[in-house]
Image 1 (cartoon, one colour):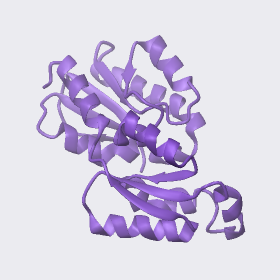
Image 2 (cartoon, rainbow, N blue to C red):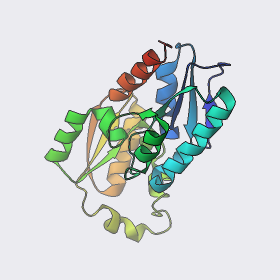
Image 3 (cartoon, one colour):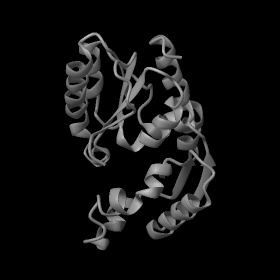
Image 4 (spheres, rainbow, N blue to C red):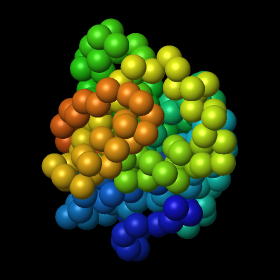
Amino acid sequence: MPPSAIGEPTQPRLVIVGCGALARELMALTAGIPGVRVEGVDVRLHMRPQLIAEAVARKVEVVRERYGADVRIFVGYADCGTAGTLDAYLEREGIERIEGAHCFEFYAGAATYEALQEEELGTFYLTDFLARQFDSIIWSGLGLDRHPELLPMYFASYKRLVYLAQSDDPELTARAQAAADRLGLEFERRETGFGDLATAIHGAATMAGAA
């Protein structure tokens, strides 16, 4: 999904610059909250995390040019594989983000995610978005559509696939199960809802006086 803007307030109290993979969830969480705008960053960076900090910085510049340098911004990313580069940028700019290492942690909750990892370190995770876009983001993104012989190299250390479900959608569950079968992994489903993402977004909206 290309960079996009969601919502139409003329002068928002809060702009959430978020990963395109969270677009549906961010829209749902901010629906009905006046003065909040969501700006999406290219979802394809999920597979190129070294580019996330730069992409967020460009989007922040666009937001400030559009709404003024003093507009309140909250970033809808965890670290997401940026190895601290996103945090270094956000610290310089005085911008907060969702806590956690990645979306799996904030959807499951830090304690539950840690328990899942302790239970089986070789766990591959899907969210609603990744279940929906498994072929384009994971299968094609890793080149397995062109080189299926690479599958053992990528997934030899994994034992199970855990689907962290934001919704109760039988079709997405079937897709996640099919993904596990293709990868040769055991399948487990955990319904998380929005997890800590909801807390982070509502907290940011409250701080901005939008909720």
